Image 1 (cartoon, rainbow, N blue to C red):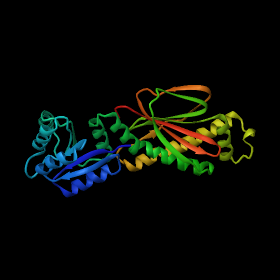
Image 2 (image 1 turned 120 degrees about the vertical axis):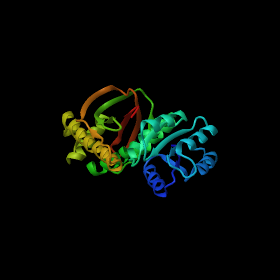
Image 3 (image 1 turned 180 degrees about the horizontal axis):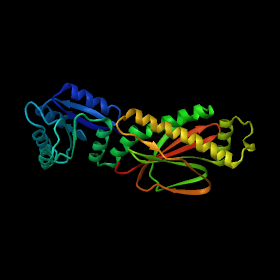
Image 4 (image 1 turned 180 degrees about the vertical axis):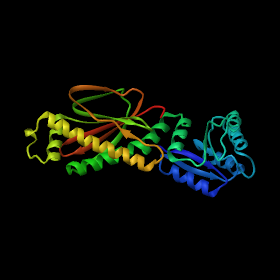
Length: 287
């Protein structure tokens, strides 16, 4: 998945390091850092970043003038001003030269991600950020959870799921995600795999001795643990805003169709000796 290139413009070495540290946790890649307007213009020409973060106070020009120069080179340039100052007058002047968003220092990783994603208008860029900043946290929790809950090593694969519906035959557990970003996670597998999973979880030698209700309850509890771990992974990384999970709901049957309206969705598949175990995690558009 491609990285989204960012240039940082700030006269403070410390501020540049802090911003680069924030972005290192995401799918935004810092390709250039400039300490003044002249260097920013030259580096923009050389590196062609998708987005620029802009300080207001620079030694040779202010951030608004620097932004004007950059947009005279590239009228489509996406610029996020990150400054100690943020007021209505500054925003009005900034928007007049094409600055798209404003943040006031100190900034958090989550604030930066949300602002950059608003500016990152390409679908590919948005998917890349959601995948590396959020979906991968669920993939790690999924793989680790399967190992710790039922003792099975597995390989996982993740792909973008563009379908408007998720069709399931077997057992599916749906858990809502609240906060930033909001969305939902669905763990699902065939009935046979669900019984085998439950037998390992409950220490039963024969999966056939388990009832469908027992299998469903086991998968529900395991899903709650795994999705909770994924959310905790994200909260540990982005400490300023908290995600939470809603109580799980379990459905069983054949050809179950679950809608995914206005979600950017990823399918995570775990291959195990008892069959495939899948998770479908989606994030609301606009978050």
